[in-house]
Length: 590
Image 1 (cartoon, one colour):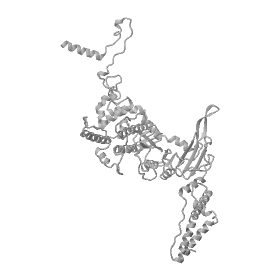
Image 2 (spheres, helix red, strand yellow; image 1 turned 45 degrees about the vertical axis):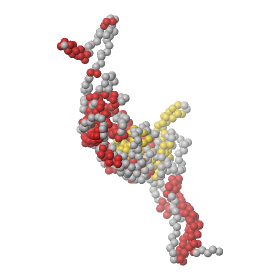
Image 3 (spheres, helix red, strand yellow; image 1 turned 90 degrees about the horizontal axis):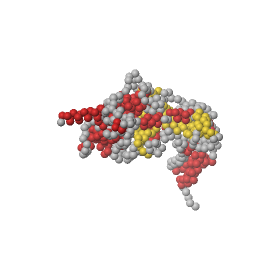
Image 4 (cartoon, helix red, strand yellow; image 1 turned 30 degrees about the vertical axis):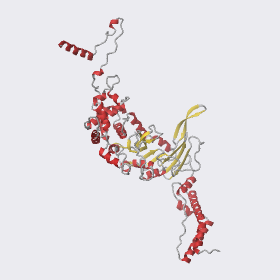
């Protein structure tokens, strides 16, 4: 018979008992969780340790007794062999398994159950909300636009544009270049806005002559060739900085936004300083159409503009003012480690600039329990639709909605400051909020077909759904205002697309500020006045007429005399008469 030492026998006992010991520990954890959720009164309060200690202890089981026998064997072996042997540490149940067990124990409540009113954070903005300009003073469209495109910013733009043109001519470009000045750059921007209002098929048609479809105004501001040369060379960064950045391509120090960052930082700072947003904010994406192969262009099939640069935008829900934005540059190293959607929201919400007590609305791309809890800790309320597969969202809970649930059915679960709400409309709607209670008696009207007739019927609607529909459209409103008179057109350089979008942001925000201060101009009237001021002309005076503008007088009345058909009732054209007189005078002298 084989003989075993005390140490070998101990190892065999540990090996035989290891699997059983681990499963026994997991069962203990499950029992603790079961006691915890049976004893809880409010899911928002975590009383796990108190409830477990107050509950009667379960009787020891066979696994626990065998565990103690193994520990006794260890102690005996230590005394005999004078060696220190450490007991194996049993594994704990995985955290996601604990969360799954916890979620499965929770049950959805209905609209008849009373929800606790969440703790509201007092609204304390860092500044008085609205325009940070005196409403007593008169502010013209151009003066407001210069708050975003100041003379200092345009001077930097001119300097970089002249440097880029000098670099191009040194490489052998065939055009003649003269340095662009600040006033000329403002006129160039005015022409861009004019082209946004008066659409033709191509840029060259704005300087088309000798045609009834001619547009006379652009030729009075700038020649066609000068406009083209400026468009080819407009540059927001210095060419030397671009070259230094290009050498870093493929390294972490490379900045993809180097060519737009100088002007982008100026616009972002101006958007924050000129206007302080009201309480309700919205975060969403915005697409700037572009198909350039830059590594930053995105494809979003659900957007009207599918290809282009994606911007994360923070907008005021009341009027569509663009408070802040950031350009997505592709796969980044997320500083917080919580993913793109988390970082996109937290980077736009600056507590020092905004203050506290703001309500932020977002869609299901951003919403997560982790984000909403962290915003709540930062004294920001948040509300948004969510995806059921997000981490820490309730799943497999009892009494949930089904496909056969009646329209208007409501289910909700509260977890501390978070309330998860599901509402059955034409399909299931899931909303999470740290601002609202689950249900306050709100209703929604829907058109339903009953007995072959369409009627308006009222259904109960959760408070988070009602407020989400009311305030989520801030970025959509901003996009709508921008698209009315957008300067976007086909370009050869990707960064010029971003430059044109900066112009759109500046003009739209200028209009919103003017509307908040005075409110006496429509969007169209504001743009017309802005164009005339930028181009340095008066809106009331007609442009100078050229020889090609001469149009004959309409035909005369009908007459029975064939000899007078072409002449009776017609007045002599002033231009033709002057030409004939000059010709006659020259003939007389000869």
